[in-house]
Image (cartoon, rainbow, N blue to C red; front, side, top):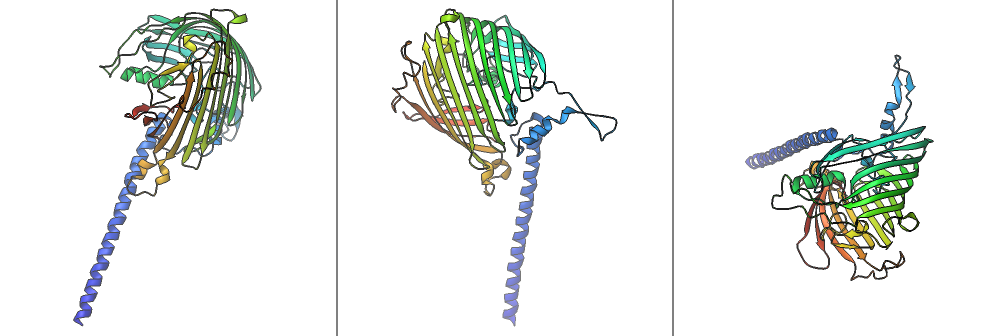
Length: 476
């Protein structure tokens, strides 16, 4: 009898211990869920304030953007059940899907200044210092015949120069198709490095850390163009042919100030080939967004051909061609493979400001910035991006942290050559071999929208410490 009581007491104690452990686990799980919920709510509020999708889920279907975009197309009458159509005279842009909700755009605009929707112009660089100005952006009228007027102007406080432009375009819109004929005049601090780094990211790097990743030149003149644009629900196409008559001049570095980086100085702004350039520039762009979930899928194509000199006159005689193809391929809901192939070739006396360059930011990140230059170029970039939500079942990391980060593995390969001016545009690529290709690989971690990222890149030809970089925009 005593043995039975003893065994019963032991069994009761074990059951009570198991019950206590289970209760502790349940309370711990509830605490973890509550903590995750509080943190996630704070992150969502951050996203809502900035209008971003770094922490909150993006819409599963791009049609939701179309529905939201059309909400302001109706006026409400006194009778709440009746909606009166509002005449929609223009859209905010030329793309079918706003750039912040679609794939990365290929930027090589015919228009001489940066395509911006903001009314206030702000930039900081080593040749102008602080530049402030006003902008009246161009509008695109998709369902009417209309004249679009646009202008911008501002002052560089270190260069002590006014810069800006003014133009007009006659537009003929038929809902999905827009035909445009335009002309404008400009005096600009220009660059050909838009494809390497966008304006906002370069502003921050220069203003905070004394890193200016663009090279600049003065450009004054006029442009006249005609364009045909098409826009569908998830894709768009732009074709333009422009005549440009510009006077180019070299610009000098005028400032060495930034908030941080006191031991560093801005690099010099290289001199260009001054003179008058008269050219015809044709560009073709196509973008197609396939989905808008955690990671975006789609195609982006850009091609340009600029013919200068000969019958057009001017001080320069060259032809330049560039093709840029990008594919954003979803593998599953939580991972993507992104690839870019870019090729350029030029014939004739290519001026310094039109040369092709590789190395550093957005090209070969393990190499020095613009380490290589020439008149023939090939570039291949590839990255594999995994969203941390794929590892939601992993218990030793907080779920709110995993779902809000991307893990990135990338590889890059580039080729550049400088050959005789009289060679054919397809010549010079036969020297493409394993020895002439520059390559690197690396890893990174970034936010869920794949923009803010910290990366480490290693060269494949020599053993050396990695190049470390921090970006606030995707490299392509």
